[in-house]
Length: 230
Ligand code: URA
Ligand code: SF4
Image (cartoon, rainbow, N blue to C red; front, side):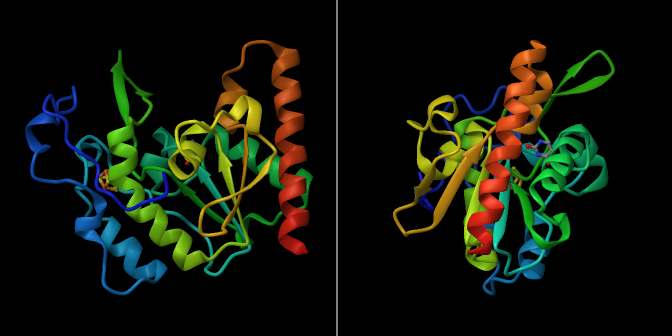
């Protein structure tokens, strides 16, 4: 939910090579700067050790784009390409997102792009680093960055890409299958619309289903662009 409560470190910690560093670092709140600007946030986030994910990632992938911005897009977590580049949505999911922006008449340089968690979470599979889903503790540990970005960017509309972003802001009862495309409001009045995550579209094996999801993504972004212009 949308609050700034700290993530709790469970007594079993996180089942990863990083578990030995977990206990004294509770959340990104410990790293927030006094002054909220994108620059000060980015600098502070680059040193964040608010959960264990920083240990195995190359760098913090903070949001990118201007503040203020009418539209803010929130993904799940950086992938391998983003981890290498230090920028959100520069890999395959970013390519599909770019196509959706083009179809919706959205200029990528005018919107703010970020993720629910700012470090790449992965598991080794052979020589590859395979994306792993952030858990609820990591999501709440990282939420102070996301809330500070929302405050600084002051978007007219937040677009959640996928259930992880939507559940972080709207709560765990949110279901992307039922509520995608709906305009919802947070308790503070902030407008939020959720749609398919581009990666979940790319992972869908059935071609017809994939096509339908892509059309829905494009449709939702067109609606978002219209809302942001009004
Ligand atoms: N998937 C995400 O959720 N975010 C990115 O930045 C890239 C892929
Ligand atoms: Fe900090 Fe978020 Fe990275 Fe965890 S994922 S270390 S809370 S920036």
